[in-house]
Image 1 (cartoon, rainbow, N blue to C red):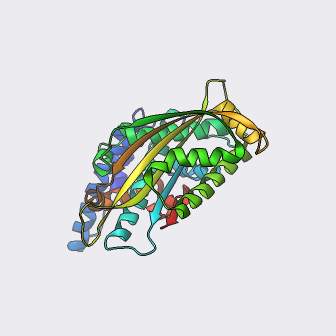
Image 2: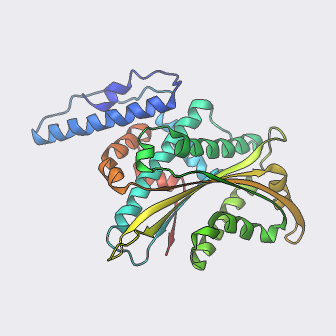
Image 3: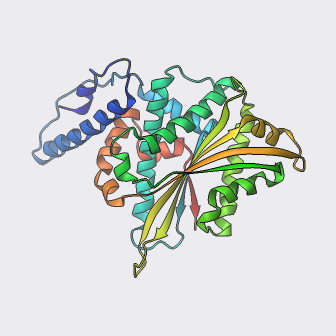
Length: 318
């Protein structure tokens, strides 16, 4: 029996995005096995329903994914080596697959709590989308939606940093870059590209002219920074893929001041950053790639490459 015929009985109103996504993943594994059997024995698949009955249609999820580029509440960046060593290309490809999966799980979580589509032309709804996206993605990578995520990305301890200082719009990017990446020892060229990416994000948010529902709301953003690091003691060098998930909460007064003042005018920057680090379990991701891709196709009808384009994943050459 094909996967889609299982899914037509899914509840119309999903109360638990976690269990639903988990079930999709399990059924994807079974569907893959069935496909292999059909191929091995030259059997024809039994026709099945073509509509997935669930709380979120593929159109709903793709709309949410596509909105990430317009109203970026999350940014994913991966370093891509100019002179890769053995295994680097596979690690970068694993990132594309895994991060696309995380993006779809994030969309499921968002839909489950906010099934009405966001109108990004509405300044208040646009702000809510940005905040909800950052919160949902932070939940997926640190709180868990699929039990396998901690296996793919075993997490270290989270650390929180608070920035409370007087700065100017001209110095703001340097302040944020230093706080986010200063401890990683990144080359100046990488930091320059990161600055360009964050500037693009800020410009996109400015263009939305965000307004907030109340004075307590913060402007949130989740940065996922995947970077290659040599395995200690490896000779010849073998790299592993580390990731820093940086959950940013900026007080709205700081955001408004940063876009409303001249580059030389001082304002108070109040930001909380929570950092969670992980090292990708490349072997486990590779072993489950076909199931992940099948899940993506069932939920969105798109593969990882298409989804990473929708969500504007960025690559930085190192």
